Image (cartoon, rainbow, N blue to C red; front, side):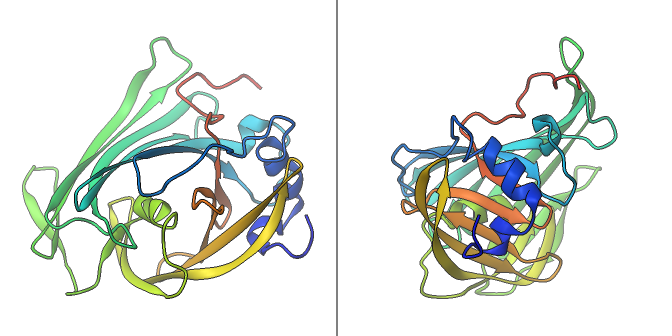
Length: 273
């Protein structure tokens, strides 16, 4: 890749020679070609890949998880469903964490959390090399937004106020931001409070349009449009969409989400290596 690309595409050999050739630049490219409308019901899937300096060559070492997002629109709200799979670092060959949740967002530029609304995260760790896959650990986390307050339920099942929100400042879940950039205006900066994984709250965040350029994947030239997200508690993150608005790539330091309608890491057992 040439120097015209932003560093989040072109900062090391690992990214250029390993990740994209296994994805967008592969002989059977994973770059989507179907039409996309960010304002109608949709579902998108991504590989979660490691894009650090180590020269891994095996696909099942590069990709260590997947993410599927689904949006259902209804009136002034949109229901966002999340299904995430991650291989664990401790038992990479056999253990995966499966996380699911769904929550309601406003139909605004940021897909901010709906007030009132509630949600539940359910996560379990399974040994995917056993049949059937049996959970070894699991947990649930319940929360809600009501009257400008974020609530959580502790181990006792009793709800408590987690945060009193600043009036007029939207609260945006990390997964919702992935969806929001697909239709976000490019003429202004958006301030918000960040609710990472519906668990960790951090005020003082913002997102704004960054730049655009033409990239080539698998012999196809694609116009890429980028946004940058900054704020306390995170390193700058980058989101890249195509002309239709579909999110193709999100970069978070040493991790990256890369669009793939058939993710490499799914519910099946990991390949032996």
